[in-house]
Structure formats: C-alpha cells, structure tokens
Image 1 (cartoon, helix red, strand yellow):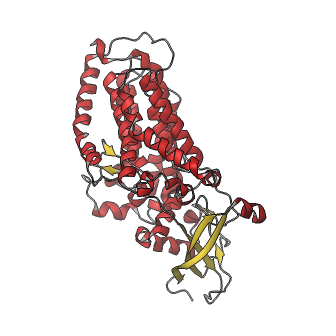
Image 2: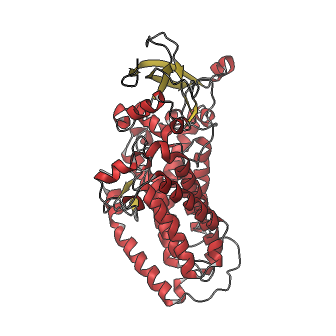
Image 3: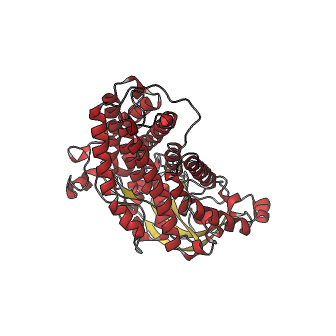
Length: 470
C-alpha cells in the first residue's frame, strides 16, 4: 500500500526516536538513583506493601510477581542501558521486528515502575512518556519508511497534550481568563529554576502577552498540526518555541522536553527521502490493528476534554495507552514552604539549636539561588511542594520521612542537598515549620543578596523523636 508510508518524514522519525530514547534514559536514571529511600523495602511507601493490597490487573508490573531492591535496581539500570543503546541507534542495526521488540523493552520496564510508584509517580509526564513510548514501538526503523498512521497518532497525542492543557486553564482559574496568572506563577510554581526570579519581575504587560500567546498556542495552533506541510511544520515549531520558553522559566521534569520531542515528529526536515523497501504485510497489519485500538480508546480522553468537569492527567487504563493531560488549571497566589529542622539538644525548646535540612531543588535558605535540574526529576522536592499546600498530601509518607531523618538513614539523606548532622550523631528531635516565601525585589536583592524573603506562618509538625529515645 503506497499510502501507508511517508518517506519524507524519515529524518523526523530519526530525530524523534533519539530524543525519546534520551527521555527514557533520564526517567530510568531518576528511578535508579531515588527508588530505594522512596519505594524500597525500607522506603517511605514500600512497594511490597503496595502490591499486597493492589492486584495485578489494576497495576500490571513485573514487581507484582516478585519484589526486591536488587530487582528494582536491575530493572532501572537495564532500562538505562537499553535506552542508551537506542540513543546510539542500535535499533537501526536490527531487523524490523527486532527493532520493534527493542523499543518495547523500555516501555514494559518503565510501566512496571510507574504502576508501583504510587504518589511519587502520579505526574502527567509519567503517562505521557509511556503513551509516547508505546506509539514509538510502531514506528519501525530504517528498513521501512515511517507509517502515516503512526505519524498521525503522534500528532493526535501532541494535540491532546496542548489542547487539554489549554482547556483546563480556560475552565479553571479565572486568572487565566483575565491574563493575570503569570503575576504569580513564576513565584509559586513547584520548583523554580535559576531564571524564574527574573521571569517573575518582567513587566506585567509582558505577562499578559505571555498568557495570551499561551492560549493561542494551546487552543488554536494544535488544530494546525493536521494541516498539510508547511503549515503543520510551522505549528510544531511554534510549540517548540513555547516549550523552550517554559524550560527557561522553571523546572518541570521532562514534561516540556518530551512535548518538544513529540513536536519534532511533525517537522518535515529538508532532506531527500531515503530509498527503502515496501513495508511487509505483517507490519502493516500490526500497525493498523494497534492504531485502530488506540483511536477507539481515545473516546475516553475526548469525552473528558469536552466535559465541563474536565480533569487533568488521568489514565483510563492500567497500561497508560491513551491518557488525558493538562497542567496548572489553578495557580497559587502565595508560596508556602515546609522547613524541616533537627536539634541535638536534650530538650526540644523553641529557641534551641535548631538546624535546617537543605533540599536539592525546593527553596530553603533564602540566599540560595535555585538551580536547573529538569529534565531530571527530584521526586521528594516536588512532593514537599504539595505538602506545603496541605498536610493531607504528605499523609502517606511524611511521618516515615521524619523517622528516617531521626535515624540518619543514609539512603534518605542522599535525597537531600545537606544534612546539618554528622553521620554518627543523628538529631534527637525533628520538627517542621511552615513559612510564606516571596521573591525579593531588585532593591532587596542588591542589599541582602537573598532571592527569597520568608515569614513564619505556623508549626507544621511539633518536635518529634524516635519512640523509646530519651
């Protein structure tokens, strides 16, 4: 079938596949370096406890069959290795069926991690990586030209990412409709980046322009993805420019980067189409059958998008095949931070020698400038932002986290930037206090060198010690 393939998108497929493989490397590396204190046998929310109460059909995962920290590490590092091989182009050295199986491996391994990841893996970019990774299995390699239906599925996915995010904003916080959300967002976003302070201090009229441009990019431009070239290429390029602006303004894990990767699959690069053989019949049958399934499953996110009660970041099946997306339907006006402190004093006094734990990404010391971490994802730091919004978000894990600090647990401390206590002398008490943070003004920055100004709000957790300790 001549219509089945689009040779002119061969370069776009290559760029997309290598970019997606990089995203897989980042995701597996994040899992390998952070799983033990978060999900391990002595983690804050242990996987063994989770699989005891959640059946396989609701959360299919290799770890439903057996779990150990060693097995989890093996899965994560194997995922890193396979993804790195895909970055290097090993799939192009294999026959078509072998390349498809190789692309299936990281999808199965990461699905196994996400489905037992609990609150640490509840973000939209996890499902987005899985859905994108599953579609990528169908793209094939250099033996055949990219299938038209698979290119359509990638555009359909990119459409849902952008259009869903635009709808949730227009239906959500009124500040999006008034064009005022960016008066607050750069200051209150989960994890500011090194330029976020400067973005916050841009003139307010420019913030209005930013919001208006965002609405155009998310509510109008997505429809142009289905137009012929060069309109579709221009639409994708505009989305990439918008996402790069977001990359500069904050740390949003790999959400922006994988959206850029998806947009790259739309761009028709100026390169001569390679001479490739016709697609084998079995390949055409597999691609068309799976594409039909994905189109059928799409009715659920479509119903969600057109609903007045639209929800963000929802998976409709345990395999995360077709999902709904969206971000920042509401924007906080005030930033709160939980500051965790410990003391070695025999008695926990309010005015005692309390020393603060410093996190890698989330604001703490007002003089410490935010750093760039994305696309790497600091899971504990992100959950601490939610914990500051409401203690209910921290209910499943915060108490255990404090207990690990009281034990000077080495794995947990590796999640932090700095512990104020030596390894052989844990604190006697740990407490948490809630502060309101705001960016300093230009004048305050010059006078104090601090990018944040903070004000004490209330006690978040009273001084706590290990049971039986005196």
